[in-house]
Length: 475
Image 1: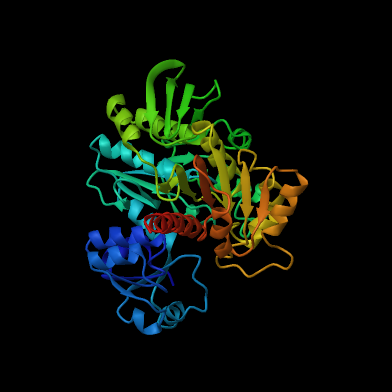
Image 2 (image 1 turned 60 degrees about the horizontal axis):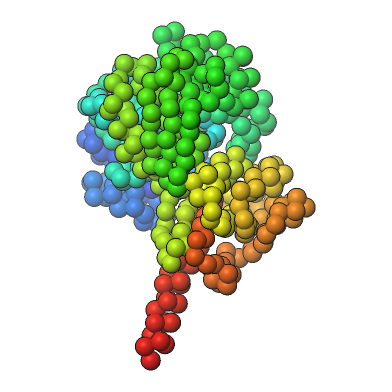
């Protein structure tokens, strides 16, 4: 049994199983601000659950069937297994169970203008940029993002305007629940192959997504990616393009990089429009900014507040996020866990800091991804001077026999990368780093797991070592 969208307004109590997740927590927050009674469960406290409790949510840190006693509707993500006791109790008591995407879809349907951002990479940043542009142009959008925007420290907001901007998750096909007027597709690549059979299956699912556009809707799509160009040939809808290609509706020229700063000329419909400055690095972020600008321009938004919005945008958490700095050694953490993302992040680091030694610590994410993309992983670290591979962060997956981080290391060694290391136990990595790091190094932890703790631990130990040395000198 599923609660229909039109019936959601008739309920009072909504319970989230896994409420602390990146995708679940912003929906819960918006519902709280819409005056629903929200409860939820998770295995442990985190920043999201802390903030939700502060907003009035009742949160339990154990999955138990008694947690849903007062629930009118239960919301789950695809990460919740069927044997979860709360989910089983909901089904037994015939409490309607909605997928996360169905609840997101209901929220979107409350607004007139619905913008959804999909694609293998760049969704979070692009959605954040669009949200910042529309907010800076005083349109008060509602937005829901799968990551936290730096500066405002939020992953959502309930606005008063007619726009709803959302990151659309294609990982399990659930973005097909959404019905936007406007879509953005950043790129389409082999990914989430634990759900999709192959690239053809991914293409077909994205075609279904695009087919949901109304006749007056349109698709904004990156024209630089070869898969996207192939995809465009297979669909029938209104299309606007962005990128570096001369045939794009909006493109960037004269790009300059200096550390975190990126600037470029904007050519819109083959005429110079303005020069944009960003405080985040990389060509991929130029593309993300172009997508956001194109949507703003199509809505008739003035260029100056859009320029200001993009300049003031400081990125999102875990996307080239600076952890700290000590003795001119910079620590960066990045969510990159797909070969294309790794290559883009390292290209940004090399372009912005050409004279630094770049040391990468990569924690593969999921056994299926490591198995199916191992060769691609072995070819994406060319801009790193030193590469350290550790073992796989399983997420919810069971191990696959013979699959570990070492298969990426072995392929890198075969490709004759200059300086590679395999350290299976990540808690041994800080000690190894301390044996050779020096001023002017940039250390980048990469992955969607818990590898960021390596940077934090190494930074802490460097500071402790200096204190010890100072004490010994004083004595």
